Image 1 (cartoon, rainbow, N blue to C red):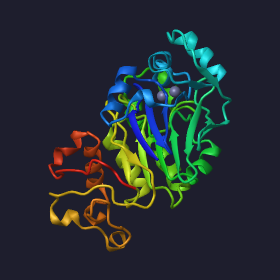
Image 2: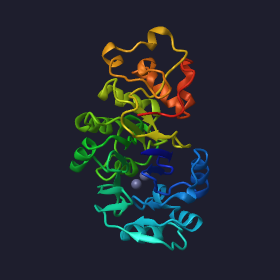
Image 3: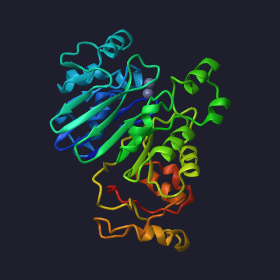
Image 4: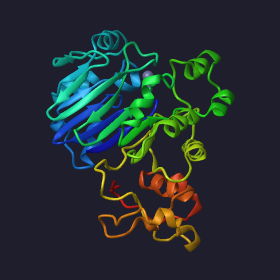
Amino acid sequence: MDMIALQSGSNGNCIYVEADGVRLLFDAGISGRQAEQRLAAHGRDIRDVDALVISHDHRDHASCLGIYQRKYGFPVHVTRKTLVICRSKHNLGQVQDVRHYTAGASLKFGTVTVETIPTPHDGVDGVAFVVDDGRRRLGILTDLGHVFAALHDVITSLDAVLLESNYDPDMLAEGWYPEPLKRRIQGRRGHLANSEAAQLLRTSASPRLQWVFLGHLSEENNHPALALRAHREILGDQMPLFLASRDAATDVLECEGLTARGLCHARSLPQERRTRPTSVLNENPPTASGTTANSCQPHGNYLEQCAYGLGLSRFLDSGLVEVVEKRLHL
Ligand SMILES: [Zn+2]
Ligand SMILES: [Zn+2]
């Protein structure tokens, strides 16, 4: 199973997942042209997508669903309530191929199942997703409202997850947003703070969870470095963490299980920073490229490398990192 986060953030969301020959898009919050170009950069043709699935009615998830459907011809899976609100709020135009689902239902696409999980977010009929191909389970969990009970079991069941880590509470408190908007974001129908997402992972992730993508970061009320730090403080060193970008697509993330736990390697790190604890070294099988995960930094710089691999060059200020493998294996 492969995932490409074409964009994730409060400015627009679109996630591509490919499993067992089934190609799915989740949400249409960036322009069709952007989605098409970003997929093409990874050798994928948007016209090969089998279906678009919409999570909820907010602009950053649904505003372009009509364009996608007309331009590329694939069916749009959306709940009735969400579509009604989308039609009233966004200029959808004609949408010819609509397949309604009920929040909480499981959708079948060949051998792939998409579970929809109702959320307490302030969309009208919002859901989050788990994609299951019978071997691996990938969560696409954003716009969650708060950490509701069902989320724990969902997290425990996953092999990989794109998880909302929307805001830093101090940045939000000190920022320019009007008070009602601040209350909305922090409220039980808003978004998860960095520390809430990290605590959720700490309490509920099982050993099968291979990687975490932090997504839906706020531009005004968060910073990638703050999000990473908050998660490291709570999760420790071992969990592979990545950042989805607000402006660009990630590389292809594989969720295949047994290839390697090492995700990247650095070629120019000072020696003392290249050494991993023995207990970690011994856990790492060789990567497909023949390197071992031993050369992978497990802590702060490890994250910087990974962030670099995803185009977040601001993490390169330290000058420590030369290169990251383009394709991330798990
Ligand atoms: Zn959103
Ligand atoms: Zn939303």
